Amino acid sequence: MQAVLSGQISSGERLGEKDLGEIFGVSRTRVREAMMRLSSRGIVVVSPRRGWFVIEPTVEEARETIEARRAVEVGLLLMQKSIRPEAIRQLEEHVAEQQKAIDEGDFARRSYLLGHFHVYLAEALGNSVLAGILEELTTRTVLIAALYQPTEDAQHSCDNHRRLISAMAAGHMEKAVQIMNAHLTRLEKVLNVRAGKKKSGQAEK
Amino acid sequence: MQAVLSGQISSGERLGEKDLGEIFGVSRTRVREAMMRLSSRGIVVVSPRRGWFVIEPTVEEARETIEARRAVEVGLLLMQKSIRPEAIRQLEEHVAEQQKAIDEGDFARRSYLLGHFHVYLAEALGNSVLAGILEELTTRTVLIAALYQPTEDAQHSCDNHRRLISAMAAGHMEKAVQIMNAHLTRLEKVLNVRAGKKKSGQAEK
DNA sequence: GCATTCTAGCTTGTATACAAGATTCGCCCA
DNA sequence: TGGGCGAATCTTGTATACAAGCTAGAATGC
Image 1: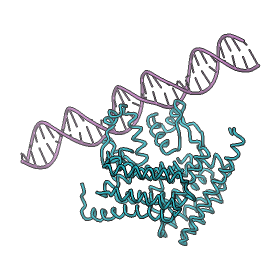
Image 2: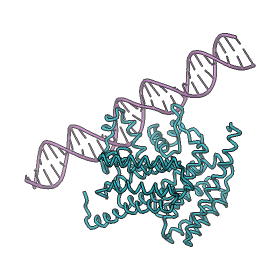
Image 3: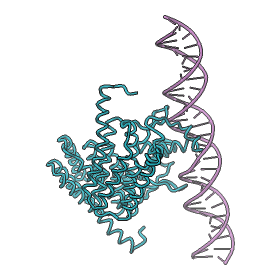
């Protein structure tokens, strides 16, 4: 999951059981168990007797994943009656780390933190079940973004996170929801453009 | 998942690899793969060298699962701008089946359908990703209900589903959200009572 | 009669062996 | 020179063997 979130592994990449076993120093049995778990969370798929591949979401699947995030994250925000000051502090700290990674040009860490922020948000708001779900969804979103959105604006995402926290801290949950919605809509817009292109272009690899 | 949803398997039950293998006519290897997947979805846990067990959620875990459902289901409803008449029809049909199972006293089918309704709802509203997430969450909810809520009122749940569909069909999404919220709050209330009892009673089982 | 220790059996953890299918590269032929 | 066929090689699918640890029950001591 971390390798995908930090952009070290991307869509369509083949993951050989033997290779992975050698990398981690374990036998194929354990690699297989891990892949099985990743496949049940929709991060990899297996092609019989060919190998394991990181998912390559279609436009429709991508849209469903983003819409699922919208439901989960908007629902998460609306559920909060009040937010612990401690949670706000933790989130601000996380954003500061994001900014640091951006400034230092640490690409892998930057990607990881920007994606992981949403997982951390659920965790800070006190729900680790939702955090687990969001880890799955944001990981897939990163893959989608890499496939369909050639250049992600890291600074813009980071600023959005900051505005989100501000709204939450001030108790303006409708505004927080609005920011979240706008963020996801922006992601989805790129998808629509690409979907149109693909229809006419047909072959893309 | 189906065995849990229909109440044939309940919390704490041990699932031996050898036994399951004999039941399904496969070797331990495949049983193990399946258990690994179930464990990554939080339905079973493994106790080293002792076996696989259906989860026994603590009160805190139960609360988190119900809150996760609240976020997901409320988010799902709020996301809908308009609802396809076809979806309403499908859902009404599903509720009719629920009523039939209740009237016929088919306990297993009744439990299965009542839990599965929420999965079906996400599917009917066009998001299979959310449907998958809800399958996990409702399955766990069934286990929670069996643990903490001795008698579930099937007819009441079914009526709630009916009212939910009516509200949706009339385009009153706020009312739909309210019904959903009330349903989950009712579930959670029982938890609180039980939590209190457990604190004083200590040993239960 | 009760508690404790030890052993035998059973269950999972992990690796490995072998089978089945996919891929690739060389070879042959047009 | 290009396309098609075939065998060698590689990869996953599945079962099985053996190791490690837990459990339960018998035997023993008090």
